[in-house]
Image (tube, rainbow, N blue to C red; front, top):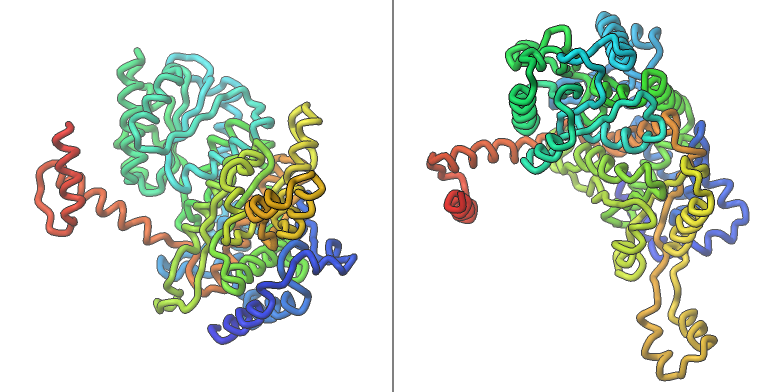
Length: 538
């Protein structure tokens, strides 16, 4: 593995300073370096790569037995080695026959859970299921964190035009009391349905927030069975949920083969389904299933997730670019960079391989981003004029959900212009010619020109969606899921655990004990001093 990846890196070193723009002397480059799946089109022609380099990447993926690894995931092999688990979120969006084929005896439980989830949505929306006060629900509050939050948040934001049920759906994740107080001011106690999402029902932030909301509702409502009638939970810890006060009939299961950051497709998606309806949720899953089928069957050269993954490795390991910018030029996709930060960096932000040995290569890039055009007036200055080259994914819908067509045309123009500008840059001689043509003096030209040069040669992908719909958005999420999986497989790490998250939780609990007066020899003098200042301030 190391030698083959090293060969790829050596190949990349030879072309690192090659001009991407000069590659377009091939008039057919844009057609050759693009691929479509359903309603998504990928143009990767602005990457610093040629046919022979792509071929080397495809051959490397073959030598790494990528096809077999893909089949192992879809068939339910326990590829999450450190937790001895299968990775089967894809089965949740598969047909019933595929569910039975893959999940065996668990298939029926999954199907029954989907049916129960759909029934809840129908009953809430129709008024068959009413609040404790006998009123129809107006609002939904989803309480979770991490994977029990990000997927819901990004989908709720992206699919706002498809919120057809009339329910206002809110999410609460941050343990900051200010976030809790904000929800309390906003929500009507008597007509709010609460969904608590926690696989173990022990997550500190989620339980603290849930307890605060529970106490607020009990103190504000006249009906003391409000928790039993208005609360639902997605969890495996049934006893803990019942002890919290919920009805057993209001608990939907989770499975250990569904990781949190890939759980939107399960009952975790209930708050989203309550916003977009059962039909919209089915379309979301059908878009993801379409991408699944493509990923399983397409050759590497036509496989969109594989292409994105290999191009990412080429940039990360071959060309030594350490970051990845996600720039959705669509207001509805503004939460996507944050979602992909978790999906990518929590999955592949590791330096130890599946065999427990230290890896000899870099893995996940630093992912960041913002909606366009706001990012142009923030961090894109650095992207254009610093020495750092930051590969970029531009994402845009060809058709807007808003009626402001002139705005959308300007938005699209900005998206295309930025990808072109990052690639072309502007040389010192070009700047001098422009300043001379504008009538600047020789002295002014010499003084000003260096400040207006831009390095260019920044690689980018452009992803075009026909429009942001439940189906196309489902496909987009699945595309990035599979891209990240492929990169983890080729980097030979486990993309489906997150042990790094646990250390902060453990120390957080220890610090709470120190705040309450216990002694600790594990904490640094800095942390002990900070705790002292906090206690004094109280």
